[in-house]
Amino acid sequence: MNADKLCVSCMEDDSGSPTCPICGAPFDLPHTNLLLLPPRALLHQQYIIGRALGHGGFGVTYLAWDIGLSMRLAIKEYMPSGVASRSTPHTVHPSSDRMKDEYEWGLDRFLEEARVLKKFSTHPNIVAVDTIFRDNGTAYMVMEFLDGMTFEEFLGQRGGKVPFETSLRIMVPVIDTLAAVHAEGILHRDISPDNIHLAKTGKVKLMDFGAARNALSQKSRNLSVILKEGYAPEEQYRSSGIQGPWTDVYATGATFYHSITGKLPPPALDRAAEDNIQTPSQVGVAIPASSERALMKALAIRSLDRYQSMEDFKAGLTEPQAAAPAFAPPPAVQTAASPPPRSGIPPTQPAFAPMHPPPMPQQHSAVPPLMTNLPPAPQFQPPPFQAVPPASTPSSSRKWLIPVLAVGLIVLAAAAAVALRFGPDLLSRGSTKEESAAKNQPPPNPPVAEPNPAPAPPPEAAAPQPDPVPATIPPASTPKAGPKAPVAKASRATPGGPTAATQTDEDRQRKLEQQKSSAPPPPAQPTEQPSPVRPAAPSNPTSGVLRYAGPPVPLNGKVTFQNLPAARLRFTFDHDAWQPVISRQANGSQTLILVSRKQGLQSKCEVRWEIVP
Image 1 (cartoon, rainbow, N blue to C red):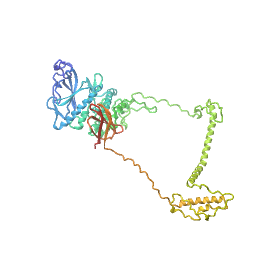
Image 2 (spheres, rainbow, N blue to C red):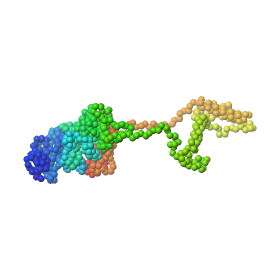
Image 3 (cartoon, rainbow, N blue to C red):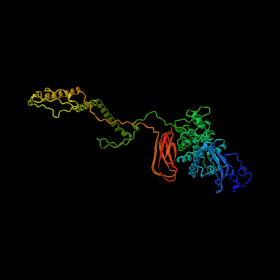
Image 4 (cartoon, rainbow, N blue to C red):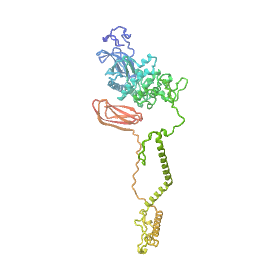
Protein backbone atom coordinates (compact mmCIF):
# COMPACT_ATOMS: atom_id res chain seq x y z
CA MET A 1 0.00 0.00 0.00
CA ASN A 2 0.98 3.60 -0.58
CA ALA A 3 1.63 4.95 2.89
CA ASP A 4 1.24 8.58 1.72
CA LYS A 5 -2.35 7.96 0.57
CA LEU A 6 -3.35 5.54 3.32
CA CYS A 7 -6.59 6.15 5.25
CA VAL A 8 -5.52 6.51 8.87
CA SER A 9 -9.01 5.71 10.12
CA CYS A 10 -9.10 2.09 8.88
CA MET A 11 -5.65 1.50 7.29
CA GLU A 12 -7.37 -0.42 4.48
CA ASP A 13 -7.64 2.10 1.62
CA ASP A 14 -4.77 3.86 -0.14
CA SER A 15 -6.68 5.57 -2.93
CA GLY A 16 -6.17 8.98 -1.36
CA SER A 17 -9.79 10.00 -1.91
CA PRO A 18 -11.12 12.80 0.33
CA THR A 19 -13.59 10.33 1.88
CA CYS A 20 -12.58 6.72 2.48
CA PRO A 21 -14.80 4.36 0.45
CA ILE A 22 -14.43 1.67 3.13
CA CYS A 23 -14.96 3.45 6.47
CA GLY A 24 -16.38 6.79 5.27
CA ALA A 25 -13.88 8.84 7.32
CA PRO A 26 -12.21 11.95 5.84
CA PHE A 27 -8.70 11.60 4.49
CA ASP A 28 -7.38 14.40 6.73
CA LEU A 29 -8.48 13.68 10.27
CA PRO A 30 -8.72 16.81 12.44
CA HIS A 31 -6.29 17.02 15.36
CA THR A 32 -8.36 18.54 18.17
CA ASN A 33 -7.03 16.77 21.27
CA LEU A 34 -3.53 18.03 21.97
CA LEU A 35 -2.88 15.17 24.40
CA LEU A 36 -2.94 12.75 21.44
CA LEU A 37 -0.37 12.20 18.74
CA PRO A 38 -1.35 13.89 15.47
CA PRO A 39 -2.58 11.59 12.68
CA ARG A 40 0.13 10.31 10.30
CA ALA A 41 2.86 10.85 12.91
CA LEU A 42 5.86 8.60 12.31
CA LEU A 43 7.24 6.60 15.23
CA HIS A 44 10.56 4.82 15.31
CA GLN A 45 10.87 5.39 11.55
CA GLN A 46 8.59 2.39 11.09
CA TYR A 47 5.04 2.99 12.34
CA ILE A 48 2.42 5.44 11.00
CA ILE A 49 -0.01 6.58 13.67
CA GLY A 50 -3.73 6.57 12.87
CA ARG A 51 -6.85 7.31 14.87
CA ALA A 52 -7.02 6.78 18.62
CA LEU A 53 -8.67 3.49 19.58
CA GLY A 54 -8.88 4.25 23.28
CA HIS A 55 -7.79 6.88 25.79
CA GLY A 56 -7.68 6.02 29.46
CA GLY A 57 -6.17 7.55 32.53
CA PHE A 58 -2.86 5.78 31.99
CA GLY A 59 -2.19 5.79 28.24
CA VAL A 60 -3.50 6.08 24.70
CA THR A 61 -3.92 3.24 22.20
CA TYR A 62 -3.68 4.06 18.46
CA LEU A 63 -4.32 2.25 15.24
CA ALA A 64 -0.98 2.04 13.41
CA TRP A 65 0.53 0.82 10.16
CA ASP A 66 3.81 -1.13 10.02
CA ILE A 67 5.65 0.16 6.96
CA GLY A 68 8.09 -2.75 6.83
CA LEU A 69 5.55 -5.56 7.31
CA SER A 70 2.62 -3.79 5.57
CA MET A 71 0.13 -4.71 8.26
CA ARG A 72 -2.13 -3.05 10.79
CA LEU A 73 -1.05 -2.94 14.43
CA ALA A 74 -2.08 -1.32 17.68
CA ILE A 75 0.38 0.88 19.60
CA LYS A 76 -0.10 1.89 23.23
CA GLU A 77 1.64 5.06 24.42
CA TYR A 78 2.55 5.75 28.06
CA MET A 79 0.67 8.99 28.79
CA PRO A 80 -0.64 9.13 32.39
CA SER A 81 -3.31 11.79 32.70
CA GLY A 82 -2.57 14.40 35.36
CA VAL A 83 1.10 13.42 35.54
CA ALA A 84 2.34 14.02 31.94
CA SER A 85 1.69 16.50 29.16
CA ARG A 86 3.10 17.37 25.70
CA SER A 87 5.50 20.21 25.02
CA THR A 88 5.40 19.50 21.28
CA PRO A 89 2.94 17.47 19.18
CA HIS A 90 5.16 14.43 19.77
CA THR A 91 7.23 14.90 22.94
CA VAL A 92 5.90 13.81 26.35
CA HIS A 93 7.29 15.11 29.65
CA PRO A 94 6.18 15.36 33.30
CA SER A 95 3.66 18.11 33.88
CA SER A 96 5.86 19.61 36.63
CA ASP A 97 9.15 19.02 38.39
CA ARG A 98 7.24 17.63 41.36
CA MET A 99 5.79 14.92 39.10
CA LYS A 100 9.12 13.87 37.61
CA ASP A 101 9.84 11.04 40.03
CA GLU A 102 6.31 9.72 39.76
CA TYR A 103 6.43 9.88 35.95
CA GLU A 104 9.74 7.99 35.74
CA TRP A 105 8.60 5.42 38.30
CA GLY A 106 5.38 4.75 36.36
CA LEU A 107 7.34 4.54 33.09
CA ASP A 108 9.49 1.76 34.51
CA ARG A 109 6.34 -0.10 35.58
CA PHE A 110 4.90 0.34 32.08
CA LEU A 111 7.98 -1.23 30.49
CA GLU A 112 7.97 -4.02 33.06
CA GLU A 113 4.32 -4.78 32.28
CA ALA A 114 5.14 -4.92 28.56
CA ARG A 115 7.90 -7.44 29.21
CA VAL A 116 5.52 -9.57 31.26
CA LEU A 117 2.87 -9.54 28.53
CA LYS A 118 5.53 -10.50 26.01
CA LYS A 119 5.73 -13.84 27.83
CA PHE A 120 2.09 -14.54 26.98
CA SER A 121 2.34 -13.62 23.28
CA THR A 122 1.48 -17.19 22.31
CA HIS A 123 -1.55 -17.44 24.60
CA PRO A 124 -4.71 -17.67 22.46
CA ASN A 125 -6.76 -15.40 24.73
CA ILE A 126 -4.26 -12.60 25.49
CA VAL A 127 -3.38 -9.76 23.12
CA ALA A 128 0.07 -10.51 21.72
CA VAL A 129 2.85 -7.92 22.28
CA ASP A 130 5.25 -7.58 19.35
CA THR A 131 7.86 -5.17 20.67
CA ILE A 132 8.45 -2.22 23.01
CA PHE A 133 10.63 0.86 22.56
CA ARG A 134 11.28 4.29 24.07
CA ASP A 135 10.86 7.47 22.04
CA ASN A 136 9.67 11.08 22.45
CA GLY A 137 10.41 11.00 26.18
CA THR A 138 7.96 8.13 26.78
CA ALA A 139 7.53 4.45 25.87
CA TYR A 140 5.41 2.53 23.36
CA MET A 141 4.04 -1.02 23.28
CA VAL A 142 3.39 -2.53 19.83
CA MET A 143 0.57 -5.10 19.89
CA GLU A 144 -1.53 -7.07 17.44
CA PHE A 145 -4.56 -5.28 16.06
CA LEU A 146 -7.84 -6.95 17.00
CA ASP A 147 -10.49 -6.76 14.30
CA GLY A 148 -13.82 -6.96 16.04
CA MET A 149 -15.43 -5.19 18.99
CA THR A 150 -15.15 -4.98 22.73
CA PHE A 151 -17.57 -6.72 25.06
CA GLU A 152 -18.88 -3.28 26.00
CA GLU A 153 -19.77 -2.52 22.36
CA PHE A 154 -21.30 -5.98 22.05
CA LEU A 155 -23.58 -5.29 25.01
CA GLY A 156 -24.53 -1.88 23.58
CA GLN A 157 -25.72 -3.50 20.36
CA ARG A 158 -27.99 -5.86 22.35
CA GLY A 159 -29.72 -3.42 24.63
CA GLY A 160 -27.13 -3.44 27.42
CA LYS A 161 -27.40 -7.08 28.50
CA VAL A 162 -27.32 -10.64 27.19
CA PRO A 163 -28.71 -13.96 28.50
CA PHE A 164 -26.80 -15.87 31.14
CA GLU A 165 -25.73 -18.61 28.70
CA THR A 166 -24.26 -16.06 26.23
CA SER A 167 -22.33 -14.26 28.94
CA LEU A 168 -21.06 -17.56 30.32
CA ARG A 169 -19.61 -18.54 26.92
CA ILE A 170 -17.72 -15.24 26.81
CA MET A 171 -16.55 -15.11 30.42
CA VAL A 172 -15.30 -18.70 30.83
CA PRO A 173 -12.30 -18.12 28.46
CA VAL A 174 -11.56 -14.93 30.42
CA ILE A 175 -11.60 -16.85 33.71
CA ASP A 176 -9.30 -19.55 32.28
CA THR A 177 -6.90 -16.89 31.00
CA LEU A 178 -6.75 -15.16 34.38
CA ALA A 179 -6.06 -18.48 36.08
CA ALA A 180 -3.03 -18.96 33.80
CA VAL A 181 -1.85 -15.40 34.47
CA HIS A 182 -2.23 -15.80 38.24
CA ALA A 183 -0.19 -18.99 38.11
CA GLU A 184 2.74 -16.82 36.96
CA GLY A 185 2.28 -14.42 39.87
CA ILE A 186 0.68 -11.63 37.76
CA LEU A 187 -2.57 -9.76 38.40
CA HIS A 188 -4.68 -7.94 35.80
CA ARG A 189 -6.39 -5.46 38.18
CA ASP A 190 -8.59 -3.91 35.45
CA ILE A 191 -11.17 -6.46 34.31
CA SER A 192 -14.13 -4.70 32.66
CA PRO A 193 -16.21 -5.10 29.47
CA ASP A 194 -14.05 -2.58 27.56
CA ASN A 195 -10.92 -4.70 28.20
CA ILE A 196 -12.45 -7.88 26.78
CA HIS A 197 -12.25 -8.03 22.99
CA LEU A 198 -14.44 -10.23 20.80
CA ALA A 199 -12.61 -10.89 17.54
CA LYS A 200 -14.41 -11.61 14.30
CA THR A 201 -12.81 -15.04 14.33
CA GLY A 202 -14.74 -15.88 17.53
CA LYS A 203 -11.74 -15.59 19.85
CA VAL A 204 -12.11 -13.84 23.20
CA LYS A 205 -9.05 -11.70 23.97
CA LEU A 206 -8.04 -10.12 27.27
CA MET A 207 -6.19 -6.82 26.93
CA ASP A 208 -5.00 -3.70 28.78
CA PHE A 209 -3.49 -5.14 31.95
CA GLY A 210 -3.78 -2.53 34.67
CA ALA A 211 -0.85 -3.66 36.81
CA ALA A 212 1.30 -0.65 35.93
CA ARG A 213 -1.56 1.81 36.35
CA ASN A 214 -2.41 0.37 39.72
CA ALA A 215 1.22 0.58 40.82
CA LEU A 216 1.36 4.26 39.82
CA SER A 217 -1.95 4.99 41.51
CA GLN A 218 -0.54 3.69 44.79
CA LYS A 219 2.45 6.05 44.47
CA SER A 220 0.58 9.08 43.11
CA ARG A 221 -2.92 10.45 43.63
CA ASN A 222 -2.77 12.74 40.59
CA LEU A 223 -4.30 10.35 38.05
CA SER A 224 -7.64 11.71 36.85
CA VAL A 225 -9.02 8.18 36.38
CA ILE A 226 -7.50 5.67 38.78
CA LEU A 227 -10.15 3.00 39.18
CA LYS A 228 -13.37 1.99 37.47
CA GLU A 229 -16.20 2.30 39.94
CA GLY A 230 -18.38 -0.76 40.14
CA TYR A 231 -15.62 -3.09 38.93
CA ALA A 232 -12.84 -2.30 41.44
CA PRO A 233 -13.03 -4.02 44.87
CA GLU A 234 -12.56 -2.12 48.09
CA GLU A 235 -8.91 -3.14 48.57
CA GLN A 236 -7.96 -1.23 45.42
CA TYR A 237 -9.20 2.00 47.01
CA ARG A 238 -6.83 1.61 49.95
CA SER A 239 -3.07 2.07 49.77
CA SER A 240 -2.70 -0.68 52.39
CA GLY A 241 -5.20 -3.03 50.76
CA ILE A 242 -3.82 -6.52 50.14
CA GLN A 243 -4.44 -7.50 46.52
CA GLY A 244 -4.33 -10.94 44.99
CA PRO A 245 -6.32 -13.27 42.72
CA TRP A 246 -9.41 -12.38 44.75
CA THR A 247 -9.08 -8.81 43.38
CA ASP A 248 -9.56 -10.04 39.81
CA VAL A 249 -12.33 -12.37 41.02
CA TYR A 250 -14.38 -9.35 42.14
CA ALA A 251 -13.86 -7.44 38.88
CA THR A 252 -14.70 -10.54 36.83
CA GLY A 253 -17.87 -11.09 38.85
CA ALA A 254 -18.84 -7.41 38.39
CA THR A 255 -18.36 -7.73 34.63
CA PHE A 256 -20.50 -10.87 34.57
CA TYR A 257 -23.17 -9.17 36.71
CA HIS A 258 -23.25 -6.13 34.40
CA SER A 259 -23.56 -8.26 31.27
CA ILE A 260 -26.64 -10.21 32.42
CA THR A 261 -28.48 -7.51 34.42
CA GLY A 262 -27.61 -4.42 32.39
CA LYS A 263 -26.75 -2.68 35.69
CA LEU A 264 -23.37 -1.82 37.11
CA PRO A 265 -22.81 -3.02 40.71
CA PRO A 266 -22.72 -0.19 43.28
CA PRO A 267 -19.22 1.08 44.11
CA ALA A 268 -17.42 -1.10 46.62
CA LEU A 269 -17.01 1.72 49.16
CA ASP A 270 -20.74 2.45 49.05
CA ARG A 271 -21.51 -1.22 49.54
CA ALA A 272 -19.15 -1.32 52.52
CA ALA A 273 -21.32 1.33 54.19
CA GLU A 274 -24.68 -0.09 53.05
CA ASP A 275 -24.91 -3.09 50.76
CA ASN A 276 -28.12 -2.90 48.74
CA ILE A 277 -27.03 -4.82 45.65
CA GLN A 278 -29.79 -6.90 44.04
CA THR A 279 -29.27 -10.47 42.93
CA PRO A 280 -29.79 -11.26 39.23
CA SER A 281 -32.95 -13.22 39.96
CA GLN A 282 -34.41 -10.23 41.79
CA VAL A 283 -34.20 -8.17 38.60
CA GLY A 284 -35.75 -10.94 36.49
CA VAL A 285 -32.68 -12.72 35.12
CA ALA A 286 -33.05 -16.45 34.45
CA ILE A 287 -29.99 -17.98 36.12
CA PRO A 288 -29.40 -21.29 37.91
CA ALA A 289 -29.42 -20.99 41.68
CA SER A 290 -25.92 -22.45 42.09
CA SER A 291 -24.48 -20.03 39.52
CA GLU A 292 -26.18 -17.10 41.23
CA ARG A 293 -24.71 -18.09 44.58
CA ALA A 294 -21.25 -18.32 43.02
CA LEU A 295 -21.64 -14.92 41.36
CA MET A 296 -22.74 -13.20 44.57
CA LYS A 297 -19.87 -14.82 46.48
CA ALA A 298 -17.42 -13.41 43.92
CA LEU A 299 -18.97 -9.98 44.59
CA ALA A 300 -18.52 -10.20 48.36
CA ILE A 301 -17.25 -6.94 49.86
CA ARG A 302 -14.60 -8.50 52.10
CA SER A 303 -11.83 -10.26 50.21
CA LEU A 304 -11.85 -13.18 52.65
CA ASP A 305 -15.49 -13.89 51.81
CA ARG A 306 -14.81 -14.24 48.07
CA TYR A 307 -13.35 -17.08 46.07
CA GLN A 308 -9.59 -17.07 46.49
CA SER A 309 -8.82 -18.37 42.99
CA MET A 310 -10.28 -18.31 39.51
CA GLU A 311 -10.48 -22.10 39.46
CA ASP A 312 -12.85 -22.08 42.45
CA PHE A 313 -14.95 -19.30 40.90
CA LYS A 314 -15.30 -21.22 37.65
CA ALA A 315 -16.23 -24.43 39.49
CA GLY A 316 -18.99 -22.63 41.39
CA LEU A 317 -20.23 -20.75 38.33
CA THR A 318 -20.49 -23.82 36.10
CA GLU A 319 -21.66 -26.24 38.80
CA PRO A 320 -24.68 -28.21 37.54
CA GLN A 321 -27.95 -27.79 39.32
CA ALA A 322 -28.25 -30.32 42.15
CA ALA A 323 -31.42 -32.39 42.10
CA ALA A 324 -33.82 -31.65 44.93
CA PRO A 325 -34.19 -34.32 47.64
CA ALA A 326 -36.98 -36.81 47.12
CA PHE A 327 -38.80 -35.71 50.25
CA ALA A 328 -38.53 -31.94 49.64
CA PRO A 329 -41.08 -29.99 47.56
CA PRO A 330 -39.87 -28.09 44.49
CA PRO A 331 -38.50 -24.60 45.27
CA ALA A 332 -40.96 -21.74 45.21
CA VAL A 333 -40.79 -19.11 42.47
CA GLN A 334 -39.81 -15.65 43.70
CA THR A 335 -42.32 -12.99 42.69
CA ALA A 336 -42.05 -9.22 42.70
CA ALA A 337 -44.65 -8.87 45.45
CA SER A 338 -43.03 -11.28 47.89
CA PRO A 339 -40.08 -10.02 49.95
CA PRO A 340 -36.67 -11.64 49.39
CA PRO A 341 -35.52 -14.20 51.93
CA ARG A 342 -33.00 -13.29 54.62
CA SER A 343 -30.14 -14.96 52.83
CA GLY A 344 -30.24 -12.29 50.11
CA ILE A 345 -30.51 -14.90 47.35
CA PRO A 346 -34.15 -15.73 46.57
CA PRO A 347 -35.06 -19.13 45.18
CA THR A 348 -35.37 -19.19 41.44
CA GLN A 349 -37.52 -21.29 39.18
CA PRO A 350 -35.59 -24.44 38.32
CA ALA A 351 -34.23 -24.62 34.78
CA PHE A 352 -35.48 -28.17 34.47
CA ALA A 353 -38.83 -29.76 35.39
CA PRO A 354 -38.78 -30.91 39.01
CA MET A 355 -38.49 -34.61 39.55
CA HIS A 356 -41.47 -36.25 41.22
CA PRO A 357 -40.56 -38.06 44.42
CA PRO A 358 -40.50 -41.82 44.07
CA PRO A 359 -43.34 -43.74 45.76
CA MET A 360 -42.61 -44.65 49.33
CA PRO A 361 -42.39 -48.38 50.04
CA GLN A 362 -45.50 -49.92 51.56
CA GLN A 363 -45.18 -50.65 55.25
CA HIS A 364 -46.82 -53.79 56.63
CA SER A 365 -48.71 -53.58 59.85
CA ALA A 366 -47.46 -56.92 61.12
CA VAL A 367 -43.78 -57.28 61.84
CA PRO A 368 -42.36 -60.57 60.56
CA PRO A 369 -40.80 -62.88 63.13
CA LEU A 370 -37.16 -62.27 63.95
CA MET A 371 -36.05 -65.77 63.04
CA THR A 372 -37.37 -65.56 59.49
CA ASN A 373 -35.04 -62.64 58.75
CA LEU A 374 -31.94 -64.55 59.84
CA PRO A 375 -29.70 -66.02 57.15
CA PRO A 376 -29.28 -69.79 56.98
CA ALA A 377 -27.23 -71.02 59.92
CA PRO A 378 -23.65 -72.15 59.27
CA GLN A 379 -22.66 -75.76 59.57
CA PHE A 380 -21.91 -75.60 63.27
CA GLN A 381 -21.25 -78.92 65.12
CA PRO A 382 -21.39 -78.90 68.93
CA PRO A 383 -18.53 -80.75 70.66
CA PRO A 384 -20.63 -83.62 72.17
CA PHE A 385 -21.91 -84.64 68.78
CA GLN A 386 -19.80 -85.57 65.81
CA ALA A 387 -22.28 -86.28 63.07
CA VAL A 388 -24.90 -83.58 62.80
CA PRO A 389 -26.27 -83.01 59.32
CA PRO A 390 -25.99 -79.39 58.11
CA ALA A 391 -29.06 -77.27 58.35
CA SER A 392 -30.72 -77.04 55.00
CA THR A 393 -33.77 -74.91 55.62
CA PRO A 394 -34.68 -72.17 58.10
CA SER A 395 -37.19 -74.49 59.78
CA SER A 396 -34.62 -77.24 60.52
CA SER A 397 -32.06 -74.72 61.85
CA ARG A 398 -34.62 -73.31 64.22
CA LYS A 399 -34.97 -76.69 65.96
CA TRP A 400 -31.46 -76.68 67.45
CA LEU A 401 -30.68 -72.96 67.35
CA ILE A 402 -33.37 -72.02 69.86
CA PRO A 403 -32.18 -74.49 72.58
CA VAL A 404 -28.58 -73.37 72.12
CA LEU A 405 -29.57 -69.73 72.53
CA ALA A 406 -31.65 -70.60 75.58
CA VAL A 407 -28.77 -72.49 77.23
CA GLY A 408 -26.40 -69.63 76.46
CA LEU A 409 -28.73 -67.10 78.03
CA ILE A 410 -29.12 -69.27 81.15
CA VAL A 411 -25.34 -69.59 81.52
CA LEU A 412 -24.86 -65.87 81.12
CA ALA A 413 -27.58 -65.14 83.67
CA ALA A 414 -26.04 -67.54 86.19
CA ALA A 415 -22.59 -66.04 85.72
CA ALA A 416 -23.98 -62.57 86.20
CA ALA A 417 -25.78 -63.61 89.40
CA VAL A 418 -22.63 -65.18 90.84
CA ALA A 419 -20.62 -62.11 90.00
CA LEU A 420 -23.15 -59.82 91.68
CA ARG A 421 -23.40 -62.03 94.77
CA PHE A 422 -19.77 -62.99 95.47
CA GLY A 423 -17.77 -60.58 93.32
CA PRO A 424 -17.42 -57.72 95.83
CA ASP A 425 -16.48 -60.05 98.70
CA LEU A 426 -13.85 -61.83 96.67
CA LEU A 427 -12.35 -58.56 95.51
CA SER A 428 -12.30 -57.10 99.03
CA ARG A 429 -10.71 -60.25 100.45
CA GLY A 430 -8.06 -60.30 97.83
CA SER A 431 -7.22 -56.65 98.33
CA THR A 432 -7.16 -57.02 102.13
CA LYS A 433 -4.79 -59.98 101.97
CA GLU A 434 -2.50 -58.18 99.56
CA GLU A 435 -2.38 -55.06 101.75
CA SER A 436 -1.64 -56.99 104.93
CA ALA A 437 1.02 -59.05 103.21
CA ALA A 438 2.66 -55.95 101.83
CA LYS A 439 2.68 -54.12 105.19
CA ASN A 440 4.10 -56.87 107.40
CA GLN A 441 5.94 -59.90 106.26
CA PRO A 442 5.70 -62.83 108.75
CA PRO A 443 8.89 -64.13 110.36
CA PRO A 444 10.83 -66.50 108.15
CA ASN A 445 10.64 -69.36 110.65
CA PRO A 446 7.73 -68.89 113.06
CA PRO A 447 7.87 -71.03 116.23
CA VAL A 448 5.90 -74.22 115.94
CA ALA A 449 4.67 -75.96 119.08
CA GLU A 450 5.47 -79.65 119.44
CA PRO A 451 3.49 -82.23 121.46
CA ASN A 452 6.24 -82.41 124.05
CA PRO A 453 8.25 -79.23 123.75
CA ALA A 454 11.58 -79.06 125.48
CA PRO A 455 11.91 -76.56 128.27
CA ALA A 456 13.17 -73.26 126.86
CA PRO A 457 15.86 -71.30 128.65
CA PRO A 458 14.54 -68.65 130.94
CA PRO A 459 14.08 -65.22 129.45
CA GLU A 460 16.52 -63.69 131.93
CA ALA A 461 19.38 -65.62 130.31
CA ALA A 462 18.69 -64.05 126.90
CA ALA A 463 19.80 -60.55 126.24
CA PRO A 464 16.92 -58.14 126.00
CA GLN A 465 16.04 -57.42 122.38
CA PRO A 466 14.26 -54.28 121.22
CA ASP A 467 11.16 -54.51 119.08
CA PRO A 468 11.74 -54.29 115.37
CA VAL A 469 11.22 -50.72 114.16
CA PRO A 470 10.32 -49.76 110.59
CA ALA A 471 13.19 -48.29 108.66
CA THR A 472 11.36 -45.02 108.13
CA ILE A 473 10.90 -44.29 111.90
CA PRO A 474 13.86 -42.49 113.49
CA PRO A 475 15.47 -44.10 116.58
CA ALA A 476 14.42 -41.17 118.80
CA SER A 477 10.77 -42.09 118.45
CA THR A 478 11.26 -45.81 119.03
CA PRO A 479 9.57 -47.12 122.23
CA LYS A 480 11.91 -48.08 125.06
CA ALA A 481 13.09 -51.65 125.05
CA GLY A 482 13.42 -53.74 128.26
CA PRO A 483 13.36 -57.22 129.63
CA LYS A 484 9.57 -57.23 129.37
CA ALA A 485 9.52 -56.53 125.59
CA PRO A 486 7.29 -58.63 123.36
CA VAL A 487 10.32 -60.41 121.90
CA ALA A 488 11.13 -62.04 125.23
CA LYS A 489 7.58 -63.33 125.42
CA ALA A 490 7.84 -64.85 121.98
CA SER A 491 10.81 -66.97 123.06
CA ARG A 492 9.19 -68.36 126.24
CA ALA A 493 7.55 -71.81 125.98
CA THR A 494 4.25 -72.29 127.73
CA PRO A 495 2.29 -75.41 128.48
CA GLY A 496 -0.34 -74.26 125.96
CA GLY A 497 1.88 -75.17 123.03
CA PRO A 498 0.69 -73.90 119.67
CA THR A 499 -2.00 -71.73 121.21
CA ALA A 500 0.55 -69.77 123.20
CA ALA A 501 2.73 -69.27 120.11
CA THR A 502 -0.20 -68.07 118.03
CA GLN A 503 -1.27 -65.66 120.75
CA THR A 504 2.26 -64.29 120.87
CA ASP A 505 2.27 -63.62 117.10
CA GLU A 506 -1.04 -61.75 117.31
CA ASP A 507 0.29 -59.63 120.19
CA ARG A 508 3.39 -58.81 118.20
CA GLN A 509 1.30 -57.79 115.17
CA ARG A 510 -0.94 -55.60 117.32
CA LYS A 511 2.09 -53.91 118.91
CA LEU A 512 3.62 -53.16 115.55
CA GLU A 513 0.42 -51.58 114.27
CA GLN A 514 0.14 -49.43 117.41
CA GLN A 515 3.72 -48.24 117.02
CA LYS A 516 3.12 -47.34 113.39
CA SER A 517 -0.05 -45.40 114.19
CA SER A 518 1.50 -43.51 117.14
CA ALA A 519 4.87 -42.79 115.52
CA PRO A 520 5.36 -39.36 113.86
CA PRO A 521 5.61 -39.31 110.10
CA PRO A 522 9.08 -39.89 108.70
CA PRO A 523 11.02 -36.86 107.60
CA ALA A 524 10.66 -36.00 103.97
CA GLN A 525 13.59 -37.28 102.01
CA PRO A 526 15.07 -34.70 99.66
CA THR A 527 14.35 -35.85 96.17
CA GLU A 528 15.27 -34.28 92.95
CA GLN A 529 12.11 -32.92 91.31
CA PRO A 530 12.23 -32.33 87.58
CA SER A 531 11.71 -28.71 86.66
CA PRO A 532 8.26 -28.14 85.19
CA VAL A 533 8.14 -27.84 81.45
CA ARG A 534 6.51 -24.58 80.65
CA PRO A 535 4.98 -24.17 77.23
CA ALA A 536 6.62 -21.54 75.18
CA ALA A 537 4.71 -18.32 75.18
CA PRO A 538 2.94 -17.75 71.91
CA SER A 539 4.85 -15.32 69.78
CA ASN A 540 3.56 -12.89 67.19
CA PRO A 541 6.65 -11.97 65.20
CA THR A 542 6.60 -8.62 63.49
CA SER A 543 9.57 -9.34 61.25
CA GLY A 544 11.63 -12.17 59.91
CA VAL A 545 14.02 -13.41 57.27
CA LEU A 546 13.12 -15.79 54.43
CA ARG A 547 16.02 -17.63 52.84
CA TYR A 548 16.23 -19.90 49.84
CA ALA A 549 19.29 -21.98 49.05
CA GLY A 550 18.36 -24.81 46.76
CA PRO A 551 18.38 -25.86 43.13
CA PRO A 552 19.17 -23.00 40.74
CA VAL A 553 16.09 -21.11 39.55
CA PRO A 554 16.05 -20.09 35.85
CA LEU A 555 14.56 -16.94 34.37
CA ASN A 556 10.83 -16.68 35.22
CA GLY A 557 11.18 -19.48 37.76
CA LYS A 558 9.34 -19.21 41.06
CA VAL A 559 10.18 -19.61 44.76
CA THR A 560 7.23 -19.76 47.17
CA PHE A 561 7.15 -18.94 50.91
CA GLN A 562 3.92 -19.81 52.73
CA ASN A 563 2.16 -19.02 56.04
CA LEU A 564 3.18 -15.37 56.30
CA PRO A 565 1.13 -13.16 58.69
CA ALA A 566 -2.13 -11.76 57.32
CA ALA A 567 -1.04 -8.11 57.55
CA ARG A 568 0.52 -5.46 55.44
CA LEU A 569 4.16 -6.49 54.95
CA ARG A 570 7.26 -4.68 53.73
CA PHE A 571 9.94 -6.76 52.00
CA THR A 572 13.66 -6.03 51.57
CA PHE A 573 15.65 -8.10 49.07
CA ASP A 574 19.35 -8.81 49.00
CA HIS A 575 19.40 -8.11 45.24
CA ASP A 576 16.98 -7.09 42.50
CA ALA A 577 16.74 -10.43 40.69
CA TRP A 578 13.32 -11.27 42.12
CA GLN A 579 9.83 -9.89 41.62
CA PRO A 580 7.48 -10.40 44.61
CA VAL A 581 3.80 -11.29 44.38
CA ILE A 582 1.59 -11.61 47.47
CA SER A 583 -1.46 -13.88 47.53
CA ARG A 584 -3.84 -14.67 50.38
CA GLN A 585 -4.78 -18.25 51.25
CA ALA A 586 -8.10 -19.66 52.41
CA ASN A 587 -6.92 -19.99 56.01
CA GLY A 588 -6.07 -16.26 56.24
CA SER A 589 -2.29 -16.54 55.84
CA GLN A 590 -0.32 -15.01 52.98
CA THR A 591 1.97 -16.58 50.41
CA LEU A 592 4.97 -14.81 48.90
CA ILE A 593 5.86 -15.86 45.34
CA LEU A 594 9.24 -14.72 44.05
CA VAL A 595 9.61 -14.75 40.26
CA SER A 596 13.14 -14.67 38.85
CA ARG A 597 13.57 -11.69 36.54
CA LYS A 598 17.27 -11.96 35.82
CA GLN A 599 19.10 -13.89 33.12
CA GLY A 600 21.01 -16.88 34.37
CA LEU A 601 20.40 -19.18 37.33
CA GLN A 602 19.52 -17.88 40.80
CA SER A 603 20.40 -20.31 43.58
CA LYS A 604 20.13 -18.09 46.65
CA CYS A 605 17.92 -15.31 47.92
CA GLU A 606 17.29 -13.62 51.24
CA VAL A 607 14.15 -11.62 51.93
CA ARG A 608 13.59 -9.62 55.09
CA TRP A 609 9.97 -8.92 55.97
CA GLU A 610 8.33 -6.75 58.59
CA ILE A 611 4.77 -5.78 59.43
CA VAL A 612 3.98 -2.21 58.50
CA PRO A 613 1.85 -0.58 61.22
